[in-house]
Length: 335
Image 1 (cartoon, helix red, strand yellow):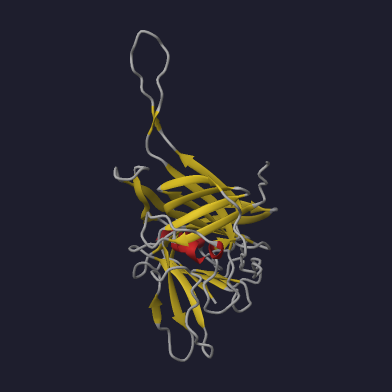
Image 2 (cartoon, rainbow, N blue to C red):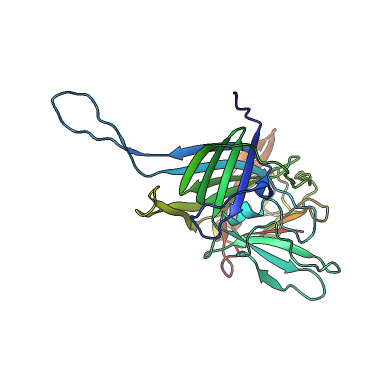
């Protein structure tokens, strides 16, 4: 039997108890692209001395797994309902927050511990709601993830990860995920069936309102890397030697490629020299239920290089996303 590469499913579920594998079902399946799986299984090489030169058997030691894939950045299609990408963002330290939109103001509800992002938030039909994902420093969700690969099930648990968001003009925006799991299994099994996928089409990165430090730059590409530090907690009580993966730090970085302009229009180098900080705002999509607004309150230029885009002078800008009050250096709002 040949395993067909295209016949692959991604399933992900928030863990009730971190490090304890969940049973994934059809409701946990999401679309993804470019799935990749690898394991880390260091062996102890026993270099015993004896009369001959023949080697001895290896001793299996620590074991862990890594899953890597891309997902489209898009909304659920329903205002106030979390997108399919939501649980994966939570596994990367971006907590889910619901903001009520309307005359009642902006009441905030922390719902990061309520389980799956398939939960539909509230029923404020007359005012609407938005779902935000914002950095968290405690109580970050862990995941059980599985690839169903045309007859093989590759599963890992106790996982947390890192994410990079990429926006290229004229194309759907993508999120690249890399998850590390504390243990894994590979078994035979059928593909999951009776799946209801999120059917919204991803908006192309076009007609986007974009400003950085109050300047509407002409850009073609934007990338935001969370740069999470993901480490495995050693635990000799576990068969894998690890309890779970945790995020011990983050250093989010923004890169973009604006056309070069006069200093009078926007003084990139002057702002760099002064260490000036300012806000970022960019909008992906225009249809209710499928809009993602990305904001950052304290963007600081930290490097500028000369670039060329088809004969047009441009800058390669690297920025750091700084805290304002804390846990607020980046926000993704789905409306």
